[in-house]
Image (cartoon, rainbow, N blue to C red; front, side):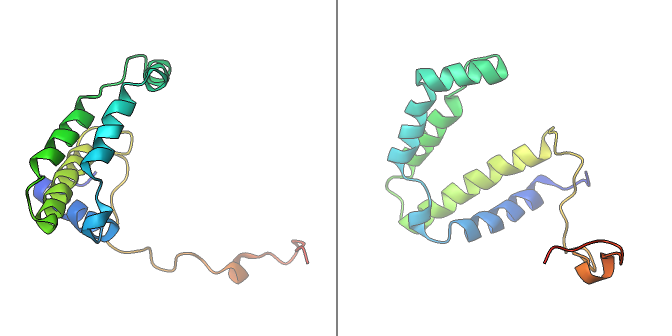
Length: 131
């Protein structure tokens, strides 16, 4: 993977998250985050985690998300959205820069030239088509 510094990745993630969450109403509320924290402790979730990963689910991150949301409670809604987007962008940046099975891919800056190829150019003459 090409070497990219942390702040560049955070800026890319912030740009993406601002498009995905264009308004204040698009970010999760504290009750939603609290529900996700409680859902993490449910027996079914723990069994699924034990089956898939061989260990119990770690719910600390969900607890920290809820506590962060509560710390933003008295901010202006737009400031709250900005803080939430910054926190999520940093989380995604750490995830992108850390070790992953996705390390073999580099993010493209622009699409490939002449992609996708035209279908009419690739059809051989001896191939039957369904009408």
